Length: 211
Ligand code: GTS
Image (spheres, rainbow, N blue to C red):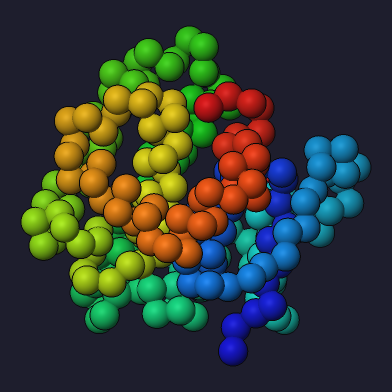
């Protein structure tokens, strides 16, 4: 029996929101241990973290770092890692693609927002196209990113797509499958409830107020 779960992180959605979406959709409860910048800058907590960074995640006695390892751990716990080895490999591929885009997004937000936003948005279709293509190859885009069942990569991808819809509201206009998929996943009853909650809505996407 997994849990209890604790997320230790800064007061943002950031790298934890896909984890929260997964937990909420799987009807799990979790505790938030919110770390202020003031506390973090004291340095003690940073020193105690394996890679000197957050998030930190506790599942009972298991302590994990690295947001994608946390997602994968929860995927194994809740059967969100595909139906066989082939789907698992495809999900790993998708999730690595999501991570590549998340890194570019974070670089824009934290290092180059004012100067880089126009070029980023112009280059975005080329970044989104692979996901549209993948979707079209699976049940003509009417299901999930891989297979017939939701997976950890769906939560991660949909979370990142939603951030991009805030950054560039029209960015999915030429990707009808991706647009419908993001809406379909977000409409899942338990996930929808979470996404409508103040816990989600009042939490900033990023730590510097840019979005
Ligand atoms: N690869 C790590 C993961 O996926 O968990 C990256 C974690 C990371 O970059 N954490 C940042 C951090 O701890 C915060 S955020 O990027 O997730 O917003 N920064 C503080 C520091 O001192 O490095």
